[in-house]
Length: 111
Image 1 (cartoon, one colour):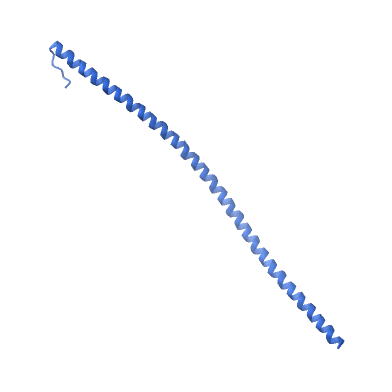
Image 2: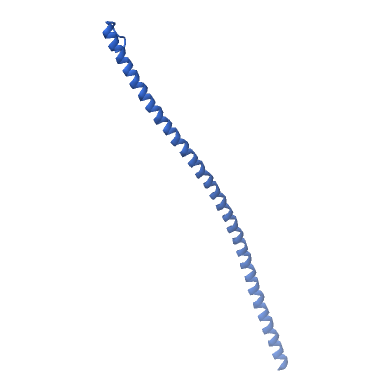
């Protein structure tokens, strides 16, 4: 009977060791999956950082272009106002020429 008991004890020990080995293999596999996922996350984080930097640069470019457009709009407004002043001045000069021509009895070519 003692021999049978030793054989059972050895069988139990082997069974326990097998279970431990199986659990360790499962842990190793899960560690490998976690490592791969961690590497993927790191790569995605890097991609996000790079895209964020690109967006920041594009935002800067848009802001600069917006400032340039505002300047150009202001220039257009100033030039339009100046053109209106010149047109008014021209109209006044044409009217004055007509008045002077009428006083001098000369037919005016401006009408």
